[in-house]
Length: 351
Picture 1 (tube, one colour):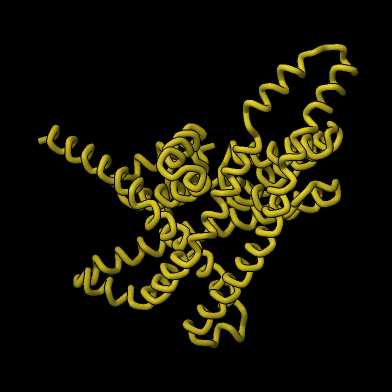
Picture 2 (cartoon, one colour; picture 1 turned 180 degrees about the horizontal axis):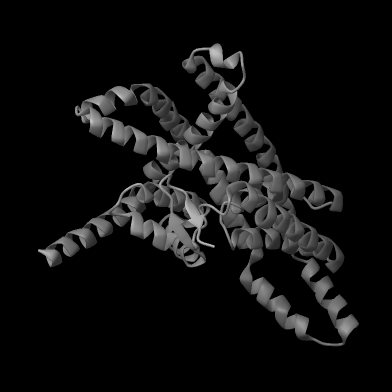
């Protein structure tokens, strides 16, 4: 019986992976719409804390929250599109500065080692990698109609969920128990995404100012990339720092601007990611670095760069949900960086 159950589990996982791969065009926009829905709910909760807003019908506040969120998203997309177009046109010319950098290092140190490094950089095809990243981001924007459609239905279905819960669980005690669990999951996910978005936004804004002052091309795009990659713990901040640093090396053909960007942006990442964020979040929801790499590889294999960008938010939501069920709570603890799962669903440090 035990072996039969394991076979069923294996076949279920294999079927799920196949569905995720072949139904990407449907599932990926749905996941993005869920994240947008959660962000709209966070904005709505902030609005409801305002005195006069609290007296308005919830539906009206929901519409206002949706308008605010979509207006900000539209503004960001417009500005990013202009930056991405500018960046795509400038990239081919910047790679020629590799020869200038090589000559500078050879003259300074009297070595020819940079020739090998130059070939390695060319083989790495920085332009190709960056182009794929740009394509993945614009591809997500290209699915905006389907995302908006999903988001509309989520907002409409939200009002009918309590009545559905009543029909699903006629027994009052079970219904109340399930309602409390759903509220805990909703609260924990909203808490994580809200705090993480705020920290990432501050990191991106500070980095934008630095990049703008130094004169890096398309600073808004790099700041947005830093904002997105900050959702990936441990390695996200490193990658987010290296991208504009390498690009500055190509753009200016000098080491000084690149070193300035690397030093200052790394300092910003350290300030917000290692000092401010732990104080606000209390070291909660830390995912194991090994799990980060595994989820990056898994979701990257399934959905490409778009999957890598969404891998950690998806994993965090799965950890929070699994932490609320006794059968899957050990898995949630295993996936955490170090610690135990509190009853509220948040992963707390054991130190």
